[in-house]
Image (cartoon, rainbow, N blue to C red; front, top):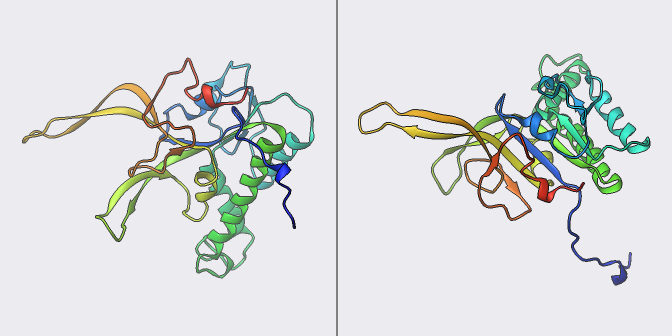
Length: 251
């Protein structure tokens, strides 16, 4: 097919953002997502108690199946509404739901490791379902102008690379085959964590100390799967009075 050079365009300014936010429980992931413009939540777990009284937020009924999630996305794509942000809370629990459905559909499988005949087939099937959900959500950004926020729970993993010593890094609690759908083709992956200082040493037992202040790591570093496309190169302070990504988010 011939390409018409008249279709070329220049990079635009503000546009809908697609991002993944992850962290341990109680870090404010859901609260931060609610700071995005006029958000609507697709919930795979009931973690929105902190949003009580926030009239800016709308909630779909708690999803009990993958189809519930797809149906909610389809409703946003086909029905009239004034929402500006879609939040899926959480992709970690969504992954658990998807894997449970795959096992339940295979009478020979007692676990996701055995599903589809084993050898990773079950995880590949789950990854394909995550791809579908990511693509459907992404279409809301490109076609409807919605910001997309995926929320995940944090985990750690060991990396044993051929050219350096093994080390640990923060990641989203999700199987490695499914994770790239939420970390590769997105604008930002942010880790919300407590600002922590280590005290002690020289024979004293070291202790981690925090003042309760939170920060968001969204720049590339070896210790986390974080990244961004906005030239952010330092941790961002996170307080509950302003969205630290407001300058990048389409209203």
